[in-house]
Image (cartoon, rainbow, N blue to C red; front, side):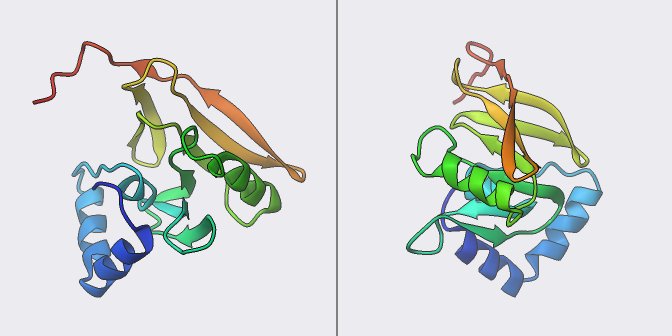
Length: 149
């Protein structure tokens, strides 16, 4: 799944009962993937710009526990907004990813973190008291290993 408007995408999917079909596929070992809207949709919550006016928490499919935030390094408001929502308890602890970073889950656990950009990172973001704590996840840089056609 690619990027786009997460709220609209999920509304259409729910209208067509795709969450149950995708859930069955996931439980049967089919790989589900995506970037931006197509990445956060698998989590319980995602930070989205799909609602005009501000970045907000959006209920997603819930296949993966917690929350997710894409574009952590490329959109100025993402990091402080996500950290604030996690710190306040509005969003569950979760994962943030810089552009070019992928989190590979096996079941509900992170198995591998990879990147197409040498200095990009992912983060585990958790609430500690009334603050958000980031734990950096250094990805494996895949330069020269991917043959995209």
